[in-house]
Amino acid sequence: MGELDLIRSFVAGLGERSGRIVRGPGDDAAVVRAEGVAAITTDTVVDGVHFRRSNHSPADIGWKAMATALSDIAAMGAIPGEAYVALGMPDDFGADAARELVAAMDELAALCEVTIAGGDVTAAPVLFATVTAMGWADDADALVGRDGARPGDLIGVTGTLGAAAAGLQLLERGVSDSYELIARHRRPWPLLSAGRALAAAGVSAMIDLSDGLATDARHLAESSGVALHVRLDDLPIAAGVRDVVGDPVELAATGGDDYELLFTCAPERADAMQPAVMPIWIGQVREGSGLELIDGAGRAVELAGFEHL
Image: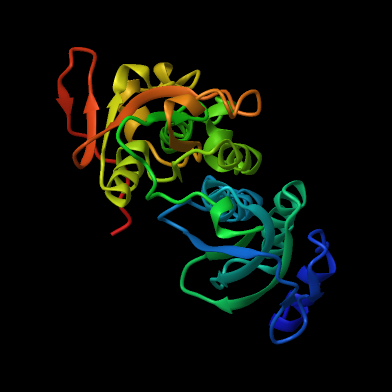
């Protein structure tokens, strides 16, 4: 199937959900009504780096590509709006597989009330999918960045850690019967509702845990110019992780692809996001710089998550 016919087949299955689209796929550019301020992010998943075609279906890949971009929108506390997709296809990735990939993207987009408003398809040496996602807010003050943490703030996380990394280990061992852990790796869920609830509650800083807490928490600390003091024994370890690895605490701190939200907030706001979000408190913001990971004996531990380069 040629490029134009393939694109037409993609477009035929897409829905419009945001109510902002003036012109969608089919023109040189999409036309979208602007509302307030836009939060815009781009994320790419690449075969051999973020997934392997040997243990991910085309639908898994499409879902993951959309989820990773929308998770960034969640971390800003924005209302999801539109997404734009660029797909690079090697010769052995056919039209049926491409349609399956895009259909899964649109399945997740529909669940999140997101419209795929445009994109591009090209030949490529390896399979990749890039998603640019847009979120909206009435004004910039409604959004949350990484730079607002202050000494005395509490550090919280939205859910359990380590499941996706444990699922990846199972896949690499050839195991496929631990459904929940593997599903957490293949099909993460962007926490858009939780992100908006946390923003509305007045959290001071927020980031999604894509590369592992030991990496992402350090990004937040650096952006805010503070030290994040995290108690490793308080990390919420996902069910089943202890059955997969010898050191579940280390995996919970370093494993990527959880896409939970890590955030800081003043103590007096600690209950403001409930019951929409039931946070797990894992530490405190202090004067200083960087990330301090402290074990049960009070000793500092050096750990690192995923680094792209």
